[in-house]
Image 1 (tube, rainbow, N blue to C red):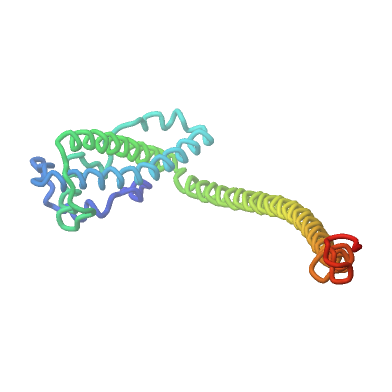
Image 2: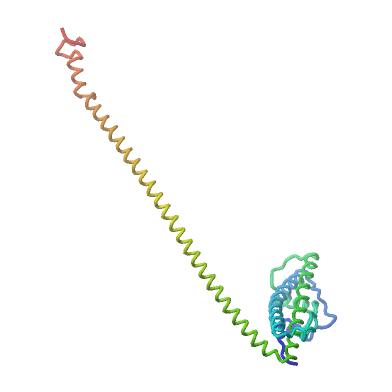
Length: 261
């Protein structure tokens, strides 16, 4: 059989582990509900990742077929779950359970029948989509082989990958440039804000200094007034002595409290 692109999508780890033990009467039930649930989670995650790759391959094949006007020739490459690497959901789940029992992927948790049922529905839906997409990739690849166009497709796909890579680099460069411009803009805005804050702080400092000067001036004036008052009217001051001795009836005027007679 000629090589097919579908082989790049094979779940080799599952198949290798399953080996010849796979059989039609294989049971997909695990004795431990927690193991069963974790196996379903691992299976759904793995199948989802493979489904993304398979869908990208199918999209590329269909685009090339359309560009080469081979749509009619490849019209029989319709959706089907029949392909060389096909595996039933029960088979895949049993292998996932065996993997989980050999190498647990998480801590022991409680698993209810409702949780297992819901996750089974989700995992089976993902698995069925994966099988259908893998079948489409295989059938489209077979069609291109029959038209001697498969090598052309590989060259075309490589060119597409290069173009996509260059486009990605350009987008990243533009995004980086925008990010740098935004960063610069933010830095300039922060600088302006800091400058405004510094100006406000300076004004506040000047205002505080003016208030300090006013307080200092008021305190000095008050101290000066007090000093002058004490000097003028305090003990041993000129007026105190004058009043006490000359008008207070001191020893010079007979001690009558006024002018002496």
